[in-house]
Image (tube, rainbow, N blue to C red; front, side, top):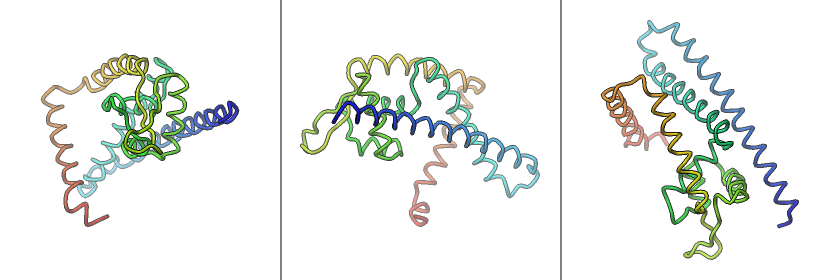
Amino acid sequence: MSRKSISTIAVQAQQAERQAEQQAEHESAQVFDLESRLDKDHHEDHHQSLRLWLRMLSCTVLVEDRIRSRLRSEFGITLPRFDLMAQLERHPDGLRMGELSKRMMVTGGNITGITDQLEQEKLVVRVPDPNDRRAFSVKLTPAGRRAFRRMAAVHEGWIEEMLGGLSAGEKGALIDLLSKIKHHLNGPAAENHE
């Protein structure tokens, strides 16, 4: 592949990443607006499930927006790149591109663009898959592992700060309740709706 092709791919990947971030910011504003409008009608008990879902969604978006902004300002990295590195940190032997795509719930093209950028920065490397010569796995380089560990430690502090308004008991109760919702969503009833 020529240098021009590689730089064109990198520019396209950066543009796609910026568009995804702008879309996430726009959706964040919409989610908050939906929740605030629904709160005005809080007296209607039949909206309780909808209110809960919107509250969970708005909290998730608020935390994600803050993390996205802090990663960009503190480390010059985007949330998708951080997420890809986090997946690879958990799998030292590497992951195939398709597996990364599934785990991150994004298209293969997005994974390719993010991987290209991280590879140019020498934070990841593509290696031939020992079980399939046509495929490649992506692994963190030693420099990538060090960079990710630095970012992850700071990231964990941000999460602690953002959720600092909850006691340990409240966090435990919330984890239990969300686990119950997740179990229900993954249960037999979910299979009937797919």
